[in-house]
Length: 139
Image (cartoon, rainbow, N blue to C red):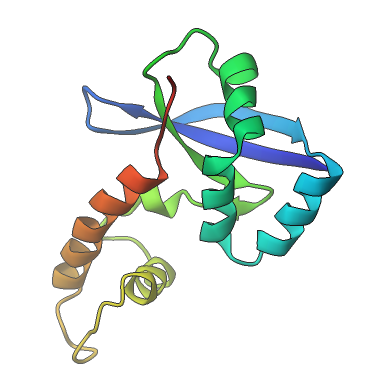
């Protein structure tokens, strides 16, 4: 099974993410393909599995970012499962993103008239910690 993925890189000077314009493909072993299929319905579990997978880190080190010790990056897409909202959320983002993050971060909204900007700021605060969890740093 081939897994296609895209990345974002972290720019320390800008304190933000930039899109890596490339699409990458990696061949999964039969065992890894089975694990992938088990985890694909839980996107963050899939992401965490890749973070802990030696084959994935080795591929990045050898094929994607050679000689890039200290480079920080994150996965923005895995076979069409998008994580871009984690890196580019804005207060003006759409309702689907607000709903996703309110559920993920267990943000309780008292009523529909509650100020969207307050909720957006709370999401952004939670995202700062989550982004650090999602980042890879090459060693």
